[in-house]
Amino acid sequence: MTERARIRRGTQPRYQRGPTVARRGAQAANARARKATGKALANIPMQPDALRRLGRRLFAAIMAVLLIVGLLVLKVPQMVGTQIGELVGMMGFQVKRVEIQGIHHMDRLPVYSVALDQKSTAMPLVDLSTIRDKLMQFGWVQDARVSRRLPDTLLVDIVEREPAAIWQYQGKLNLIDKTGVILQPVDPQAMPDLPIVVGPDANMQASELTDLLNAAPRLKAMFVGATWVGDRRWDVRFNTGETLALPEGAQQARDAYAKFDRMDQAAALLGKGFVHFDMRIPGKFVVRVSAEPGHEISDPAANPANPPVPAGQDAV
Image (cartoon, rainbow, N blue to C red; front, side, top):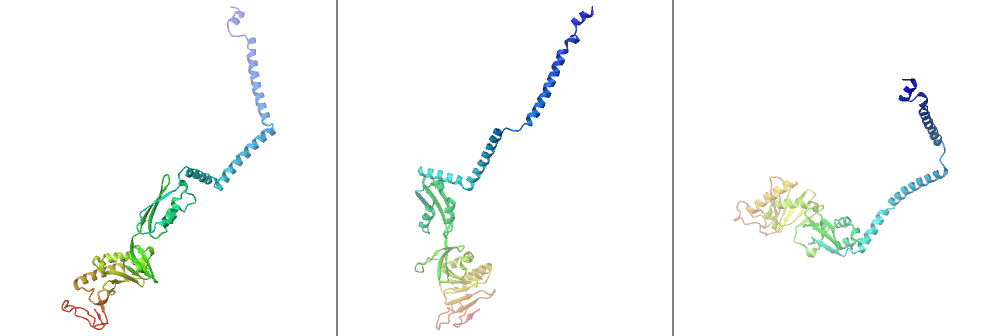
C-alpha cells in the first residue's frame, strides 16, 4: 500500500490540523483581551449620575433611621395606641359602671372616686394598676383587685382589715386592726365595743396583746383595755376596776397572765375590792387595796387562807 493510501485511511495529515491550533490560539488571545479589558474598566471612575443615585439612597436610609428614633423619643407609638384606645371607646367600650365587692365597714364613695378618676373612660385606657395603688393607701384596705368586664364595667374587689382595738394616744382615739394599722378615727360618743390600748406605739403592739389575751381566754370577757408602759410592758385593766401589771417580755407576760387566771379561778381575785395586782417581779404577787375607809376587802370566811389586809397596804 502506498504512502498516499495510508494518509487517506489514517489520521489527518499534518497540513489539515492547522485550523484547530489556530482556533486555540484565538481563544487564548480573547481571554487575555477580556482580562485586560476588565482591569481597564475597573480603573474607569464611576459616572456622576451613578454617584448621585447612590448618595440619594444613603441619605434616604439615614433619614429613615433618624425618623424611627424621633418617633420613639416623642412617644408617637403611645400616641397612636391612645388614639386606637379612644376609637375602641367610641365603639361602646367605655366605663359606665363600677361594681364594688367586699366592703362591710369602709365608705364606698372614696372607692368610686378612685375608680372613676381617669384621664379617659375608654376601657382599654383605664389604668388598673394605678387604681389598685390608690386603693391600697386606704387604712381599711388590706388587699384590692381591679379588673375589666367588657363592655363597660370595672370590678373592684376589696379585702378589708378587721378592727381589733381602739388606740388612745395624745387625746385621740383611732380604730386599729390586730397589726396596729390605723383604720379610722373613733367618735368618743360612739365607742365600739372593743378593747382600748393606751400609750405611744401601743398600736404597734396590738398583735402581741392579742397573743397575751389568748393565753387566758376566760378573762377576755372582763378585759377592757391595756396600757403600753415605757415601751416595754403591759398594764391590763379589767371591767371590775382592777389593774394587773405584767412583766417585760412577751413570753413572760403570757405566762404571768395565765397564772393570774388560775389564781383568780382559785381565789376569786377580781371584783373583791382590790385595785392593783403586780406580777412584775418573778415569784412575787403584790396586791394593793383601796385606801378608802370602810371599803370592803374580802370575806375571811370565804377565803381563810388569805386574811384581809388593812386598807392602804399591800399584800404579798
